[in-house]
Length: 448
Image (cartoon, rainbow, N blue to C red):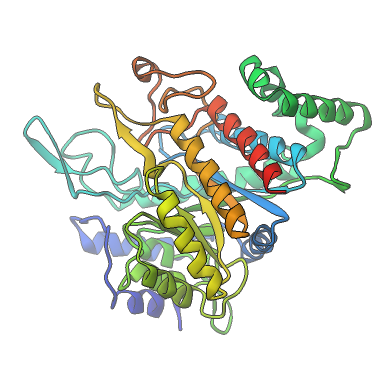
């Protein structure tokens, strides 16, 4: 089976969430061009991530998957990328210093340029235009020309994704993610008075470890020495032609999609007759599947048996996004079904997407208290079921935005006007992201 037959086979299934390209001939010409470009990630990096996911499934590792809702062309620069990495590194440091868990990082970056949409069109003041589907497809500007899907944007998305990945590699090689360089990205953890007041004991513990790092040149935690972290990338696999352009065949019947280390299938495209699920079943990458509240128990069997027929560890991740009102009712049934059938599944919590609300002044937002409550329930339910909470999946940024309500900075409805900068869904800001990490530290300790 070659890459052409992979995508053709998938197209015998139901293919949803595809843009309406005005010029299909130009679109396929660009897809063919992309297939000749260098791959963005390497197969050995994908295998390295799978090893870390296996550890998370066994309870010795914890995964932070986070980043922008949608990457944008306008916000593509080295400082922005470093800020994203910094907040993820800070979160991992908080968890790693205060628990017995190693932490792996999977960024929602280097490819998160295409978004699913509930509606094909958007209407404003009587004008109807195609919905914004991410910068890889069209522009966010409500303009007839810019909202038209343009396949040339896929070329830009590729180059920015590739450049982001190259920058990440260079930062790792330069020691940016090394624990001995912690002073480069850890200052906000111990200098934030509001976080210190709320999480005093953990902050005190981190300060002690940081002082030890400065005097000894290395940090020792749980009798294990920590060094450089790998940073892995992920995005939602929507445009299968694009993903197929980066198929790499390592050996017989072993295909890697080298557009990212991990791909996930969204709640809108994980149905029984889905081409996206079929595509995921044909590649070797770790696959996440978003699990929303309309999930059926039979769907779980289908997903496990289709995507991971050999029941391997580190292959399949269920990213549950059930919402605070339904998590207690649905999650135990999901866990019990997986457990009773012996399926190897890694569980992530997405406490963001099931808790989106709209304010009176028209902003889409989320409340930090609700996010925290769902995260707590996720851990508590796993504790009761004697299963392992393996990771978290969040939309977040290292910037001081005002997009989600609450948190230690106590953002109110009136504050959303100040720095609501997201291209799509609201993100946790830097302080709220750190607070999530402190909360996870407490929840992991409770589990122990």
